[in-house]
Image 1 (cartoon, rainbow over the protein chains, first blue to last red):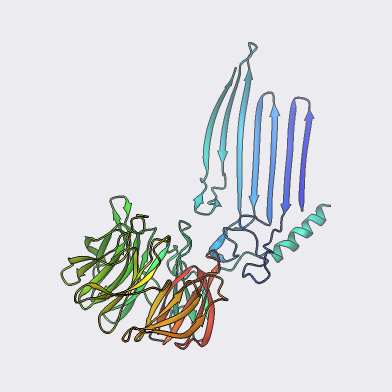
Image 2 (spheres, chains in turn yellow, orange):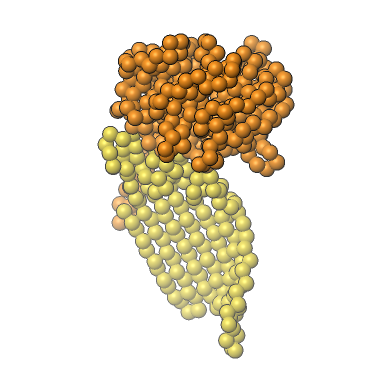
Amino acid sequence: MIWDCCLPGRKKEWRFVINSSYSYNKSLDMTNSESTTYENQIPYTPFHSSTAGLAIDWKGFGLNTNIIYSGFRYSLNENSYANYLESFTDISINVSKKIELKSGPIFELTLAANNLLNKNYEVIRSFPMPGRYYQFIFQFTL
Amino acid sequence: MFNLLFILFVFSCKKDDPPLTPESPGAYENGILVLNEGLFQQNNSSISFYNLANQQVYTQCFLTENNRGLGDTGNDFEKYNLNGKDYVIIAVDISSQIEIVEANTLKSVAQIPLFDGTNAREPRRIEVYGMKAFVCNFDGTVSVIDLISNSVVKTITVGANPDGMVQVANKLYVSNSGGLNYPVYDSTITIIDMNTNNIIENFETRINSSSMIVDSQNEIYLLSSGNYADINPALVRINTTTNQVDQLFDIPIGSMTKVGDWIYYYNLDSKKVMRINLITENLDASIILDCADYETFSGLQYNAELNLLFCFDANGYVNSTTVRCYNTSGVFQYEFMAELNSKKIICNE
C-alpha cells in the first residue's frame, strides 16, 4: 500500500510545497514452506516507511523541513531479536538565503541542522548514522 | 480515506510486532551452553542456553547478562575451575578478544584484547592447563594467559595459522595449518612445554593440518585438510614418542570427536557419521548416523558428562543452527534451535 501526495501552493510572494508519503510493504520470504524462515519479513524491508516535508520560500529566504521514518527491520532472513534493527525517525531542518546578482552569479547560504532528535540509528547493521549535526553550506553559481 | 488509512495502519501494527527482548534464565544451571560463531564480519556471535529441565532455549545470553554483544566470530570456549568456581573462557576470533565469564551467570570477569600493535592476533582455540590457558592465534602465535591475574604472560611464535591443539602430558601440540598461504600450506606441528612456556621442537606431518585428537595411548590423530584440489583430506596417526607419522587413513573427514576409545567422524562424501577404533585402528563398518536429511552438517561434538553426541545443522549458514542430540549408538534423543552457526557446546550442571 502506498500513499504519496505533493501539494504546491502560492500566495503573493510566498511559495510553499508540502509533501508526504507513506508505504506499507509486506515483503515476506515465501520461497520454501519447509524453511525456518518461511513467512519471515525479508531483510532490510520495513513494513512501514514514511516521509514528510515542508518547503517555504519568501523573497529568496527558504525554510526546509524533512522527516523520514522507517519501521523496524531485520538484517538477516530470520526474524529474531539478534537480527532486529529498531525503527527510527530522522528530522532535519535548514534555512537558506539566495542572492541573485544582476550580473548573473547566484550566491546561496544554507544553515542546516540534521537528525534533530539526536537518534542513534543504523540504516545498515553495524554502520551507525551520525547523531545531531550541523552544516554550513555556501554555494556560488556562475 | 484518512480514516481508512489509519485503521489499516493500526491493524497492521498489531500483526507485525517486533521480536521480544530475550529473557535471562537467572542461573545457567542444568543445561547446555552453545557458542554461536555468527557470520564473519557481522559482529553477531552469541551464546545460547538450553535448559534441560524445561527444554526451553534462551538466546543472546552474553548480551542479556553483559549489555554488550560477544563480538565477531566466537570460535572456541572452554570451562575451567578456579577456587571452586566455574568459569568459561571464550576466544573471539575477528574481534581478537578473550572473554572470561562466570559459568553460572555468564557475567563478564575479564576481557583480554589480543593484538600485535594494531594487528589482530585472531584467537582460534583454547587449551586450559592448570591455571594457564594456551590460546592459538591465527597470526602464528600462541598466547599464554594466566587465569589468576587474567593477563597474557607470554606470546610464543609457532607456525603459520595454527588451528588445532592437544595436550599430551605437559606437552602442547599445535598444528600449523598455513590456511592463508594457499597453495603452499603449512604442514608442521609445534610442541610447547606447558610448564616452561618454551618450544621443544617442530616436526613435519601432512599438508594443511587442523584439528587433533589424542587417545589413551598418547597417539595423536590429526586432520589434514589437503589442498582442496589434488591432495585429498586425510586422517594422520602420529606417534608422540618419535613424533613421526605412523599411519594415514584416506577418509574425507569433515569434523571429528573423541568418544571413549573411538573417533566419531563425519564423512563428507557419504554424509554419514562413522567411527574408527583408537586402539585397534580399525574402521567400523557400521553407520552411526545417516545425515542425508541435514541441510548443512557443520560439526559434531561428544559430551562426556551427558554421554551424548551433539550434531549441528547450520541450515545454510545464514539461519539459526539446529542442535540434534544422539546417544553413542546414534539413537536420536532431542533437538533444539540455537543461534547463528553453532560451533561448540558446554554442559553446565
